[in-house]
Image (cartoon, rainbow, N blue to C red; front, side):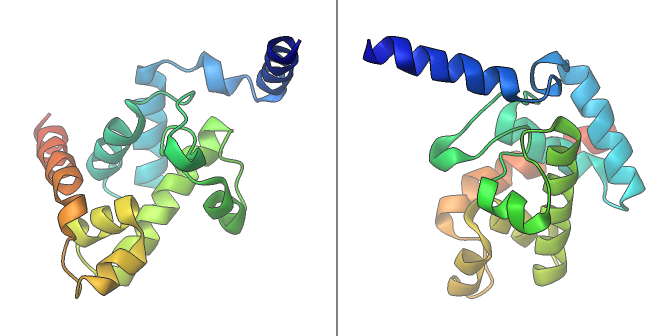
Length: 151
């Protein structure tokens, strides 16, 4: 009975989510990222790199701690930004805005990417250096960024 109730609730919740969650291909997601990034004055290559690392361009992905969507936004962070992280277009906009905020706060792409991954307090506590726990993430993002810049 318990599994039936869990299954019923899951189906109900999934049915209530916007159709965009399941309908977009990776290519459509990439195009939306490029379009929104350019419109917002952010290098699309960095945003493609972050989305690739966070979700592999899949909006249906949920991560540890409750992060959701292409840019793996935490629901509380999304609420503060006034967006619905379950909506594909809003998730992309939220990811771009969050990266922009981190870049404005720290002034470097690497620190902004590290803050995107670990939160801004981790950067402050590490004396404005990339924390060791974020180094692999930053390295992967920067390698992908260089690839997207040349392709």
